[in-house]
Length: 255
Image (tube, rainbow, N blue to C red):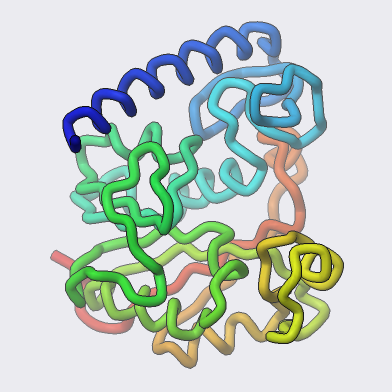
């Protein structure tokens, strides 16, 4: 059964890559570059299988959103992910990132999700991971916590499975001029869409996210999107509301 599932995933991956490559040809240009796949393009698209253009949308070659391009640039320039031997946990792996991460020779790549996605290796709840403590050198968690009912428990789990000295890249939809807004009585998709911006979100984070992460035990630095160079924003099709929270577990650096 497992062998059949792997074979089916390989076939689907091949077909997906072929479809993306064909679509990307229609978007070839010099205006933008996608750092996640290296494709040079004239404009972005609406994502999925769309061939319609959309400013700062999805990369037509790998389907990377603006948030993924932003985080990839941060990972390249401000972490050791591409240079050192790293045991990496990727939470809710989006294919635009996992397609390259899973092939990187310096990474021991583990991907966790509640559902089966391409390149997922562990199916589990972020709030109760069946993983050993002090195991990972790095964790990537992009736009996940806003979906989690007990986000503080999820943060504690991220902290637990990191090695001392390890780091986590965390990003969420956030309004830095407000406090986090959540209301457990808001349960319907329609009401959540109005309150939190998406039907599956359970909160809208605010500036106090840093305090939540610090309360978990992390040393936290926010890399503000507002500080990005205008030329970088234009070249890579970035958005100015995608802030990166870089969290380090205190202790000795991983060997």
